[in-house]
Image (cartoon, rainbow, N blue to C red; front, side, top):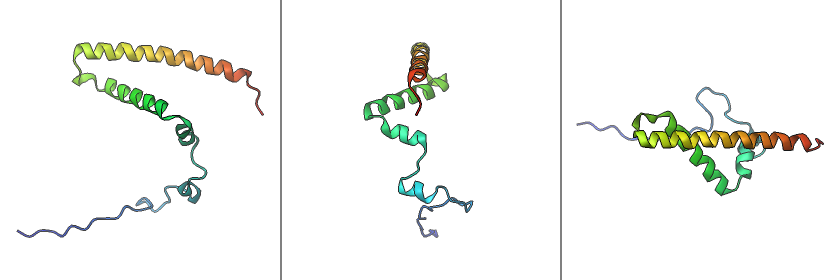
Length: 102
């Protein structure tokens, strides 16, 4: 049996399309996207909660593997979270109306 030699490939700094995947400033950590900066401003406890919410939403989308009891409990919990999210959104909008822009 002839074995092929294993040649590990180095990860490329740029995608195969030839275009840069990010600007030089982004590589250095400057001029990052606002979403990324917002994520970094959150404390670790809040990041954990957001990851947990994302996992629950992903699990909700693939409900076929869940038992009926788990499915109904997950659905009711996510519905409650959506209602809470709506309340938080309306509160934030109300607060932002009173903050002077400068």
